[in-house]
Image (cartoon, rainbow, N blue to C red; front, side):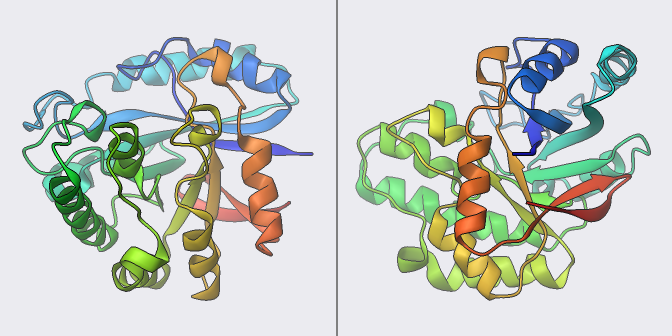
Length: 273
């Protein structure tokens, strides 16, 4: 099985543990034939949610590490350079400027925190009603982001639900609970030539297990005519490189997807699965 990974991190991300070369070699051992590094560039500071004007300060480090990695890896794995651009709707001009960086092959658009709030990963969830309000606001911000051109594919739709569930609260981002907003979101993306990813990190992190977005959302995207879709491990260390990708590809096949999307210089093409 050919595995392709379009969401993976290195030490150029604040929460990354290994270099690009280490991550690439570990991914190759798991059968990955193409990967695109998508290190974090969040417009807001992780712990506080305040704007971070220096969020792209590792650009030169990232470029140099990428060049060294391409020169060192075996020829049977293709390496591309992308970015996970977080909170683009919080500062549209800054996001636009970063997205114009000519070295980038691909950009994931993410929301890790609401405006002025810390990352969902480190937030406290005080009750079901409060947690539900977080999800309501998150969905509204995703719709805001979907109208911008600073990314190619929207990352891990449903991200906060994983951490809210771990806190014991009952939340769900599905077509049953958010069908109307999800339809608006996905139609926006399709109409603007953007895609979604199937994020496979949940297959290694129960109880938040499974894909992001959930299978019913992936099905809705296809039913609405969505074709641009990438698969990502969201690995931050070598132990997780390639983990979950096979499960993600199996889900896409089961739903009737025939292709996954790859990018070079922000232009999509399709690989048969």
